[in-house]
Length: 247
Length: 59
Image (tube, each protein chain N blue to C red):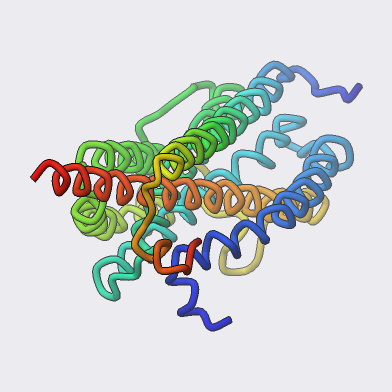
């Protein structure tokens, strides 16, 4: 099947329906293994002790909060440049999933910060820019709900998504550009990771498992959104038929 | 039972909050999907079909 065939929502529905059971199975295996390694095998950190276990959910959630927005930005380009019929569906479906993972990053970060930093929250550049990302997800969801015509809402949302994508490099580099309470990058950095392999491998497995979970939830939400648009089209057909019969 | 040390409550709260958020999201998506399928079935039961479906390429 050519990639362009996926532009057809019906073909996409069928393909997603076939992929989803395998995706859920892979999510259960990989995330289950990752959490087992994180909770029962990974040693305590020499400085942070057992609180390092929060890292195994906080860091993947933080990565996926930006990954989700990156997917939405690519979808926004698909909506504005190629008018791909599934692009807006994807952006709209990913928004609540991205918002949920951003909320997880904020909540777990706060629960990690209190014992390690002595505070639940500071308005430093990293924490504030992630909070802004969360507000952007909520704002976009409100926009899609407020505009009745999905095509019009999709174009407006796509412009907003692309404008808001400037926040992603700000989140990534905030710890380098400004003095922050949040630590600098410790996994993907010049000179290699500063995390010991005994903690790094469980972290990567948790991250892969969380990514599979993210994709499974986003695919399900996309299928729902396609059905919602199909229903709207049928309701318009019903109204047109009723108007024709009355005239 | 694993020993989570002095900050066990923070670790358990982090994992608990994550589970609650993920389960709530998954439940919302599943229930939304069921609601959409019910609405679609109700419309189709009234004989309302898409033009493409009437042409024989139902999907």
